[in-house]
Length: 377
Image (cartoon, rainbow, N blue to C red; front, side, top):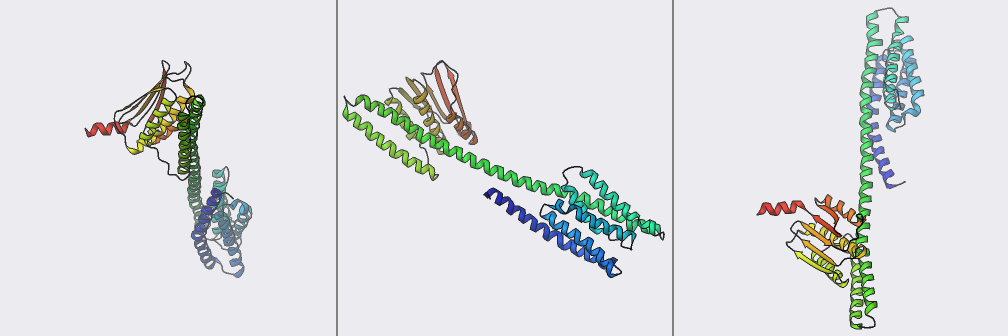
């Protein structure tokens, strides 16, 4: 059994116990009291007790969510008890069992609940009216005791149970909604982890590829530079291992200043002219997300563009990266940026990409940061 199913089963078990504790004692007490009032011989008490017992059985199965399994036996028994009470002996409380069982069953029916409710009420009234066939004494009192009161009880009990069942259905739906939200949270966390892992590993692999290509060109002409590149690769791989561990233990934090310096070094190593305009600082939380945008954009430029120039502008509210060398083609699908767009949106930011005149613009901004700075002036 999965954890989700086990949790649902546990909740249902708690609801079952609560229903049993709140229903069975009052039902048993009322049934015992009615037997004591109405029975004038032992066999009458037995018949009435059978009706009460059937009502108790239906209540137990209703609390377990499977009352339809015992629906017909309980209905037939309680209906027979009511007919015997009305037609054979003066058992004007013999309707008790059927007015418990019927309202428990009707809300559980898959369809035609209204027709079933009308049928139950009509039967209770008709069975009670049989008393008039065997006794003609004090007809008004007979109508009240055997028709009006039982019918009224059936109407009230059925009317209360239908919205009551809707309440339990709502509780179950809320439980399912919580489960779905928990599943979505797990999926979102997995996507976040996968995206971060892609940022770390993908970025590192592209840098390694770039530096290895550079070292291969210089291996016969500049061994000192080759050694430097290999030392940087060794440090980069070690840093990537550390970042992966931090990601696994939810400790990873990006430093925007470090990402700016890293992006600048990478572009210069690739022979790309880079310009960084740092107009203002941003807060730490925004800086971490902007660092992710910069890292993802740097990787995209190295992978997809034949850039000659890159301009990075950092403002009080965000960052903008503009690069040339973009082919005259439709805007490419960049899944990494699509994931970051959702992250920024969740934090009150926005991420936009645009392609024009063979240039690609990636801009991330937090409008509330800009507004807060303007208000403070």
